[in-house]
Structure formats: C-alpha cells, structure tokens
Image (cartoon, rainbow, N blue to C red):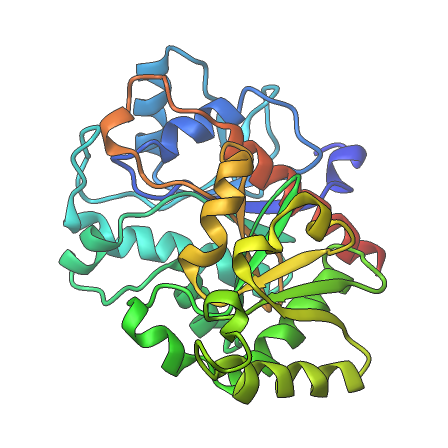
Length: 330
C-alpha cells in the first residue's frame, strides 16, 4: 500500500443480494478510481461471475495484503454456500449475507474501517432463510446499540423520515413527542457532524392535510409537533413548521432549508425520487460511523445483463467518502 493510499478513507462495501445487480455494480465500481480504499465483504465467486457476465476485468486481493495490480479490490471473502443464478435468489445464502453485513459493520465500529456502503438486499428471501429481518438499517442499529434515523439525499434535497416502513394505519400512533424530539436531535446533530453544516435549518412537515388546519383536519400538529418544535427551538435548533406537505417542496420554500423531516415514507420520498432518483442515496443517521446505501432494490430482472445503472452506488461511495473525510478532520 502506498503512503498516499494509506491516507485515504477506508470504506467497507457489502454488495448485497448475490442474485441481484449488487455484484455487477461492484465490478463497475472496480473500473473507477476513488478517493477511498474499498474493502468488499462478500462472496468472491459471485463477483467473478458478474465480471464474466459483463466482460470486465476484476482483480481481487485479500484485505490486509498488498495489491499487485492496479484497481484491485480488497476483499474479505465470505463464501455463499449456494452458487446463485442471476435473478434467482436462494434463501440458503441468508446466513452468509447477514454475516457480511455484520462483519463489515463491526470493522467500522472497531475503527478498522472508516465507513460502510451497502448494496441492495431482498428482505423476503432473508426471512425465508430463517432470519427475522426488517432491513439493513435495523440490523445495524441493533448491532451498534443506538437509535437511528433514515435520510435519503440527492444533490438537490435531503429528506429524513419520522416513521419508515409502517402501514399507514399505524403512522399516527407512532408519532409521539419523545419520538419527534429524538429524531430531530439525531438529524440536527448529523447535519452538523457529518455534513459539516454549522447551523442547520430543518423544515418539518405536518402529518395531516394543510398541517391539520388548526385542528380541523387532525390534532397531531397542535398536540405533538408544535410543542416538540417549541422545546427544540428553546434549545437553539432552527426549525420551521409544521408545514403543509403539499406546498413545502416548492423551490422557493425549500431555499434556506438544509433538510426536510417528513412524517412518513411516502410523504417525502416520492418528491426526492422525482427530482433525481439516479443519484439518490440512503443515509443512516445516528450510527457511530458513516453508513450510506444505494437507493434502489435488487433488480433481479436486470441482473447479469450489464444494463444496471451504477449511479446510485457511485453516489453512495462519494458520499460516504466525504463523511469519512469530514470525521477525520474533527
């Protein structure tokens, strides 16, 4: 390893579901030069199959050893017991996939690596494999023993979520004063420490149409959001809202806001993905290390064809690199 390379942030990367597009996106990333060292935690054979399908070179070396070829990826090889076919995930590979995520995260917690980039996984297949799994974010939060917040971001917009993967019937009950206070404290701290924004301003959306219309369309704004925002403003946070969601994303309204807190998944994310889906990334706020994921699924129907767009993975690598560099400067 050169002196220059040793100064670069070191990022763990988990390709995700081996039957999906994750492995081939790693192969495409291996053709690029990055301002970080990438260490892949996963199945070397899956990566080689993807490289062969794409007709692209792939050079791997064991993590901790010196690369002997340019653009060689370091790997912690965690073999899958079943060689998967493109587009056909096998639940038998569940344990090895979860092990890859857990080992990569542990390397970040222990300070061996500086951040984590994750590819797409297939929740249903993992559950079929005998492991109760609601998502990578929940797994990482449990391992680190901390509360986290999901934020999606692209170059134009950052949207954090008060609730994530809940049925709409359950959303209102999940929005409590304590939950709102906790979420906004995590978001505000991350904007300062990860994004380097000295005095962030956050727009908070209301839950109900027209932000409740003074209680005529729901009382969550009056009973929960307004008191919570007042308490946090008294602590020095710059918060605007609760705002009606139907007009909050107008360009003139968004100017001056560093992030938006949406009350539920489909309140905020359709707008962000409409603005720029290809370069969107999924960021987990609150972990003791930077974690950035691609903002797309396994795309089983595209796997192995060489047509999958790597833009989100590239954006995730760049974003995680920036976070890691900023943490080093603190």
